[in-house]
Image 1 (tube, rainbow, N blue to C red):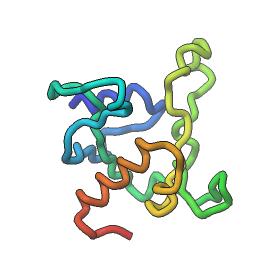
Image 2: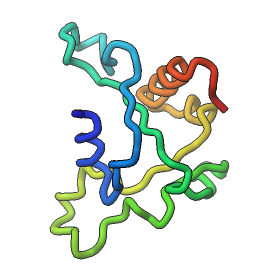
Image 3: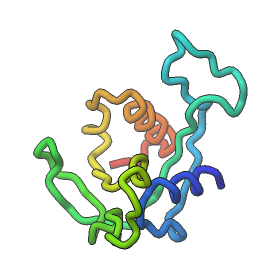
Image 4: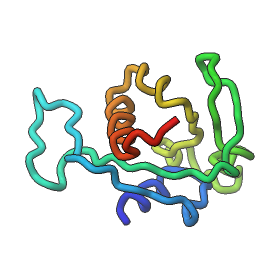
Length: 128
């Protein structure tokens, strides 16, 4: 429930009612275990997977020149009448780029790399 509520708050304009959200197994992640301890069950970053229906996606070329997918019809773009101030959108996700898991493991963001590992483990080898 909390993960779906968080996604709904951060993804502008996406109807999440028909999107399956799965909590991926594993302890919540600690982004900086050298300086912070997260021993309590509710501390750290939990990893979720959203199953996006193919009809919501369209092919495009990524920012790195590789094949990727984005949301069709700019469904994450807020309508002009829904924007009250830039600050209201400061923490919103306004666009997404979906790349292959192989490409995702080469980015510098450790959360992305760790989330890919969790997703592949969850899928149990049934991935493309």
